[in-house]
Length: 287
Ligand code: GUN
Image 1 (cartoon, rainbow, N blue to C red):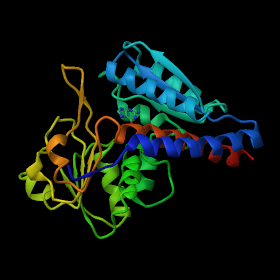
Image 2 (image 1 turned 180 degrees about the vertical axis):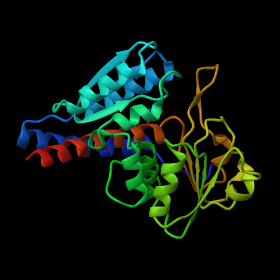
Image 3 (image 1 turned 90 degrees about the vertical axis):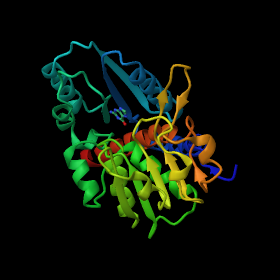
């Protein structure tokens, strides 16, 4: 093994301790406790597990969390009505509607309904636009978590060649934007890219977010590079697997994130930071 392991768990714990102090100071000053509401429609097992991680995270940093669990049959109109109620509730600072939603609900219509200042996922068109314009905004949690992990390595992002495999709205697109903001030269590969290896093997920084276990084999990795694995697929043996063939990649990469314990804890940590930031912004606007 030659790669240094980038522990998302360790960094997340450190950041959560720092955040807890800030939250407690804010509560002392204002008597307001930041409050995140998570809305879950249906019983998707992965979503249930993500949501419980988010609630535990809130407890750690003294942020209040509420879970609103709705049946699979909830209509789009009912969900929009709920989001509107949460938008106008001054005791709610962050709203997260867990994705994916059942097929009969249009995700963009729901995301569009969430008040921009409460959009702690950073998925609303205004926050996405601000991200691309380099304006201050609530940043998508996984993407920002990845940037923090890369910064932990002290490897220069500026001037590096960063390759992102995956172009989802949740990870691939926003992380590409953030890498560009950090002055990387960014290549985005996806399912229609003809020869992904031709790009990935030249990547100083490789981010993989496609949800295909062990898709990135060791021959696709540039020796000494930073490899960030966003995939978490649970296979029949009950274990989680990343998108990178970790056992072999660890001999070639310079730095690599493990699965689990890499990107996952950072996503939740940034969500907690976003909820606090949203709360402070709303407090300052109301003053
Ligand atoms: N489903 C998978 N990842 C996410 C996320 O970051 N936010 C939301 N709302 N749903 C998700």
